Length: 382
Image (tube, rainbow, N blue to C red; front, side, top):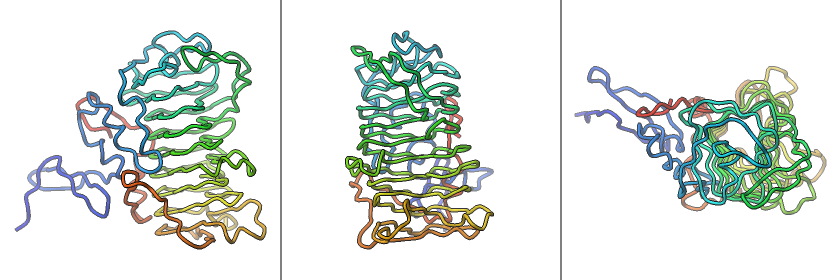
C-alpha cells in the first residue's frame, strides 16, 4: 500500500530535494531544489529567521558566517557618502566593526559614489525587497573575512575615482579608484555570494585575486558581459596558488563572452552550472590551474568554431599535464571539453563543505531560479 502524502513533505532523491504538496488529495512535485535552496527556501518563516541562511552554503565558502552572530541593521536611505556615511545607508552598515545582518526597509537603487568597502562579518541580505547596486562603482571585499552577499542585483558598474573611502569606523583612506568590477574579492577568505544577478560592468563581474580562498559563488544569474569571472591576479602571483573557489548552481545566460571562470594557479570546483552560450569559451585558465568540471550543462553556440568549452592560455606544449577534468557533464549542440592531466582531482572538501553533485542533465531544473528570488513574509521564497 502506498504511503500517504502530507503538505510540506520533502523527498530526497540522488542528493536533490523535491518539495511535495497536496491538491485534491493527490501528491505532486512542486519544485526541484539544489542542496543550498533545499536548506531554507521552503520555510515560510524566513523573514523572522533570516540567519538560518548562513547554515546553508556548500563548498569552499561553507564556513562563511557573515553577520549570523550580530544585530540586524536596516538600510533605509539609498544615498551614499564614501568618506562620512550617514546612519541608515548601506555604507554605514558595512563599515561597522561588529557583526551585522544587513537588510533593506524597501526596494531601492543604490548608486555608489565610490567603491563599497565591506568590513568583516557582514551579511548583505536583499530578501523581501528589490535591491540594485549600479551606475557607479560597486563592491570591494578586501583584507576581510566572513562575508555573505545574497539576493541583490549588481549591474552597470563603473570605475571608482581617486578619493577618500571609509572602510571602518576608525579608518578612512585614499583610494586610487576601483577598476569597475561588480564584485572584487582581494586577499579575503570565507566569502559566499548567492542568488545575485550580475551584468554589465566596466571590468569583471566577479574577480577573486591575491590569495583569496574559501569562496563559494552560487545560484546567481550572469548576463551581458565580456570577462565574467577571473580567479587569480597574474600568472606570476604565486599567492594565488591558495585560491579555492566553488562555482555551483549558477546560470550563465545570454550575452556572455568568456571567463566562466578563467583561473590562474589555484583550484576551482565548477559544479551543476548551466551554460546557455559563450562567444569565445566557457572555462579557461593559465599557469597550471586545477579545474574540476562536474555535472554541468554546456549548450554550445550555433557557430561551429566555438564548440569547445575550454581554453588554455597560452596553448603551447606543457598544458597536457594541467589537471582539467570533466565528470558527468551534459554536452548539447556539439559542445566538448578538452581534458588533461592525471591523478586525483577531487575538491578535498571537509565533511561539512561537501555536497552531492547531480548529473548534468538535471541542471536546467536546479538552476531555474538563479538570481534574486521573490520573497514575501510568511510564504516560501519563489
